Image (tube, rainbow over all chains, first blue to last red; front, side):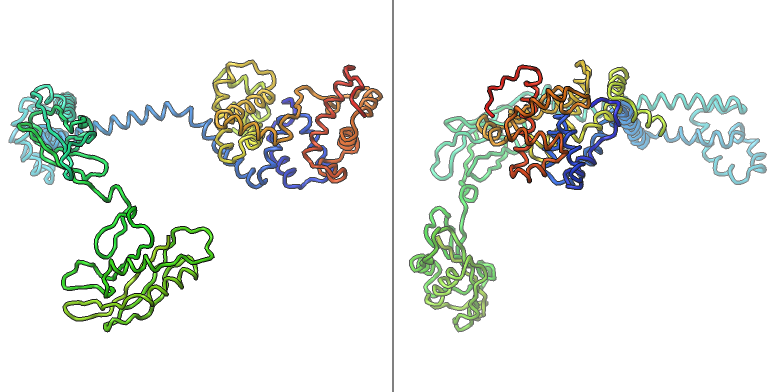
Amino acid sequence: MSPRKKNSNDLPLFLKYARGGMKEKERNAFERKLQKDPFEAEAAEGFSLISPEEAGEDFSILTERLKRHTTKKRPLPLMRIAAVITLLLGTAAVLVIFRIDDRQPLVSENIQLETGTKTPLTIASPVPIYESDKQKNQSSTGSALITEKVTGYEPAVFASKHEDLELAVDVSAEEKDARLVEAQEEIITDAMAAIMPEETKKVALPHRKIEGTVISAEDKLPLPGVSVALQGKVSGVAVTDLNGRFSFDVASDSSMKLVARYVGMVTQEIPASHDKELLITMNSDNMALEEVVVTGYGVRSKRDATGAVATIETDREMNENDYTPAAPVTGNSEFRRYIESELQYPSGVIERSRQVVLVSMIVRTDGTIDSLKVLKSPGKAFSDEAMRLINKGPAWKPAINNGKTTEEEVRIRIVFK
Amino acid sequence: MTFSRNITRDKSDQDLLFDFREKGDLDKLGILYSRYMHLVYGVCIKYLKDRDTAKDEVINIFEKLVSDVCNHEIANFKTWLYVVTKNHCFMLLRSRKTESEREIQMINDPTFFMEKSEEMHPLDSDKDMDESRLNDCISKLREEQRQCIVMFYYEDRCYKEISDTLKIDEKRVKSYIQNGKRNLKICLEGKYVAQEEK
């Protein structure tokens, strides 16, 4: 209880106790310790709910987390400042680089600085060039060319000796700094302008009103609650009223598209025009509203499909040219009706739920069924019933590819309900 | 470095607390907290019943300490931390569960109503005491309570042994000891009237 005792954490004791690693006497001593301190007693109760290994593992995780909590706080302000500085320097550097590319004078200035310090004497007059030629054969020819440019740019500065030249370098360095600052300021204003063109344009240009009505393609009645917005814009969404009417203001130069969205309808895009009244017709989108069972011919909503549904999946695309897939001689819809009426939910199954049996078979060129097998089934009773239906069912006509009959694997889904 | 660390390790709770308050040294509070973190974790597990939640709450309680430590007069850090931890867990449960769920949980937990005395019980203290009076009081206890107290404090038997010998659940052993202790205390303080049946 009191801090005069050893300060180290006594978790190991708890773990040893929990693990049953203590002799009776030791246990009693530990339990007495718990009796003295309700905090420890409750903690021990907590530890009894989990395994000692879990407790040990969690404790090391906690120690780690606590360490992070205690150490991360102090260096944080410093880190923040450092991060901000790095960011600023980085941005400045990027700006400078781009600006240098844009502005020739700065480049030549750079060259001037470099060459100026390297070959100071060659600049003074044409006569000493010969001397320096003798002294520094390698450097002078290259730099002489630049010299012309340099002297043309700032002739007065390079007239005299070393000290003056250094001064000149200093001056131009300062100048450079000043220009950089200037350049940066310009860039920043440019950037600001680029970031907020909308704002300025909005102020400058008159607003135009876009108005229109949204109707449903099915019954030509107005659709209320359709959201109409300019493409790519988050703001400025209009919602149609009870009469399907919408209107909103846009900048007159916007040559964008209008997007109309409505649940259960195909999203419509039309060019925005402010001269005339707009009429947006929306088509209903079945896929969005209902789960659809796609069958061999046509589309059926699952809601309408009561009872058993047989779905035929063939190996090939249905709409491929000159290809007719294998099908029951009675036709797919008749076959489906046959399955629906004939299907018997296996007796003995107490809780009837939706079950699917997937069977596979090969329809030979002469229409015979071969290799009939069950690919997926919830149980034998279901498989047997599925097999019975196929075997008792109508004959099949083979698939026809470019006028020739071919073998085809057909998969049939039989849904028990 | 290691030297100064050792010094920190040997510092008392109060000193560490003082350091933190005066200098705002979070490290010190961390060291102090780590001394009892396993207890906080254990209590969190007991009430919240989930390892991950318990871990999160252990860290949350620490965060809470950072601000609370400065606003409270703390005589004994461990005791104070116990209260803070328990309150934190209760608040969490209250906010999380509906009234009925909580009641059921309380009723199902036999230790929930167990008395947790804050003061040191004579049996737990190392000091000598009036043996004859104590023995007199022990003899006045109810049978199960007396048996458990005697076995636990005089025969140095652990909960498990007692539970095996008396063929009662370990939780009941604990509650007999707790309640026996409470009755003893009342008796020792002279308020014990022998109206409780034998």
